[in-house]
Length: 283
Ligand code: HEM
Image (cartoon, rainbow, N blue to C red; front, side, top):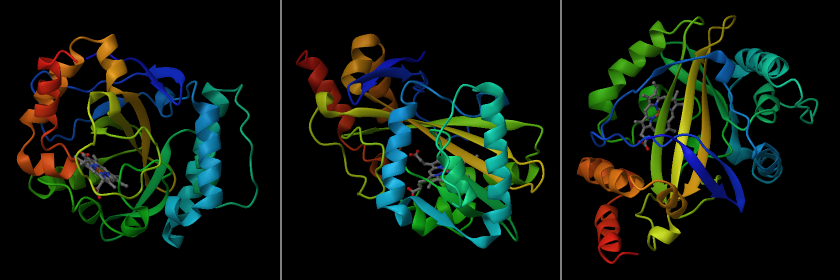
């Protein structure tokens, strides 16, 4: 489905991705080649989200930042790469710089994306991250752990994705980068959601928000660390329905076609039926 406009915090902003597959939900790596000119996406929410990051870094630093010394060198390289990206593609942007911060925090204050650095020893491990907009997971629990450990709560990941994801990370080169999309439905538009059980969204269509993560994966040329970025887009389900007649039927199909374990993990149990009922009542 093509992207459409959405609303958040009263602002009309771009909502560029609507990753609902006509074939229904399936667990897949879903990687596509990334043009590095689009490594980061800057849009009309830039100032608002930078301000939100600044508040979170002031009030909840230990929730949104986690680093190991093993990630320091790669974080410095990441910061230099982010600065280079902005100089090349967004020369008009002049974000505030706070001297003396960890380089991953400095880098994170420049772009709307959340940033993660993985370094290989015996395995690929998360060694530095600034994640202000997590979708109900705790960064502190993941720092220092492997790709497999990070994904341990994800149903079917071990059976279907663990091996290809490890192999993909081992084969990645600085010459070719990738991106993928992930989505869910929540009952809150708040970007910073570090805690909370993945219970089914409360209320009905009017209270629900479609949340899309655009993730990029790139190997840095010098340290050979891998940078994983997460950009979060949120739009109200009602606004997406208004703009695209196929949104709700595609959503119902996707929700229903996910296996029960995935429905439980994502907090989708019963949601498709609620949507069907709402449609039947012509809401
Ligand atoms: C090719 C690479 C990757 C693939 C295919 C992948 C795939 C997935 C999938 C399918 C989920 C389930 C999420 C959902 O559907 O809502 C997930 C969750 C997650 N992924 Fe990844 N992922 C990849 C890389 C990474 C990396 C590098 C990180 C590093 C931080 C990461 C962090 C997470 C976290 C924190 C979750 C939530 C886990 C939880 O519920 O505790 N992923 N990933």
